[in-house]
Length: 269
Length: 263
Image (cartoon, rainbow over all chains, first blue to last red; front, side, top):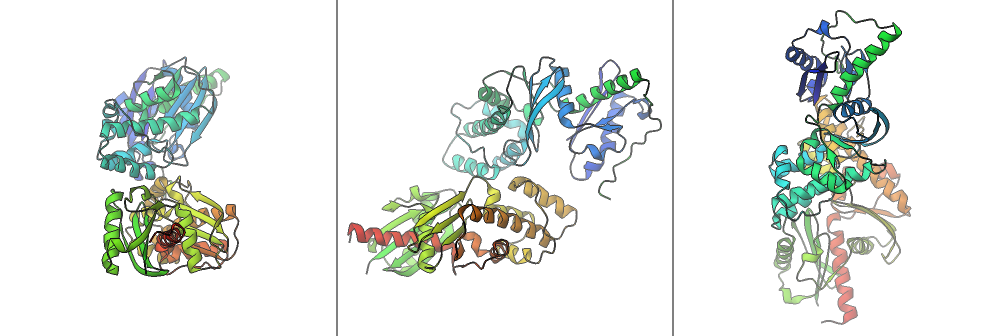
């Protein structure tokens, strides 16, 4: 997903847009940007500073600076929940756990080598079950007896799930098992850091109430989810942009960029 | 002379070998599907029909594989690595290192002259270390499984799969297709990745010649060649590598009948 957040000088969110990144759209961040500018009703020249983050941050030619997603996530999460000490983010192709203090990243662990423990795990299995991603959470809450599902390999878990269903296990018990598998794996990773409250959960998977509950069960503490769990990275980038400008202005070294062009990245050419 | 039966109920395919004394009387295989018990029953029916014998003529049956517990007619269950080792030993008495590439797992055994296991290592946690990875990529490339090995050997610069995960590997293969990378190089890359994993298992167990390869993965001559290149040795390959474990189970059934003196 590509997300854009536009804020004003008092950190008020003027626009937020979430769009599929896809293969070709990897180089078309300009289109998502245009949409956000339209939503905020501002022109590109009104934007003081742009920070790009995430895996594709180098594919944003009109950005002034690139910042790692870990730093931006920590900043964004602290904006939603100032008392956050542990942030867990589960996205489509990785999972991260971050220690945060005063909005700053102090330590992190991440896993991006294997689909188990990422949103991809749920996508693959939801597809095998013929379910939409947003159906998984509510369905799993009906479970009375979740079944164990392997959290080691997505491919094998998919087969296990099919076997469970053929043995007559209720769908909600299988889905609850899946949520427990992904939450268990991510909780185990997060415990490599010291998990302290408040614990905040973001990323696309945080929209799944079943995984939120399973994560609470696995960590043994409440888990907070922002109203827009996908936006913490982009929001953090916007906040960092505003702070960067303030710092440069204080030093008297800020030179506003004029005549920025919203062009597509030519990364693949 | 009595018949002995070995059945190997795998995650993908079920294989059975019926022997008359020490000689193979019939081989049969079928897709396992989701019902192991049903597959096991159909497997025996197929074998009996091929050999033209009745179930009462079978003196002993040993079951192995993922679904071994679902074979109601088996007297005993045996570990698949044990069956595989005995099967390979009967075909190649000189074999000391055995690579068994299955759909859901890969195992490497070091065995003595009797086919008894001295050391072994199993990779069963992850699809990227098993034949399943090849199936997934073959599916992406819309290439029949029996063709992928040969195509992979034509690769001039095999692609590098960056994560070692079959699911992410599938996405990577799709991206490479979109970028115009040749089918041969993508297939070369996935075979090389699996051969590297297999080689690391062999190194952990310690290779002792002669070295052989079996299991459904060994039906893929391309994979065998990639492993040979990686290990730098010539591998012994049985004619029907997917039946080796079932053959070993049949051998164990015969031994069992001898020791217990049943029939």
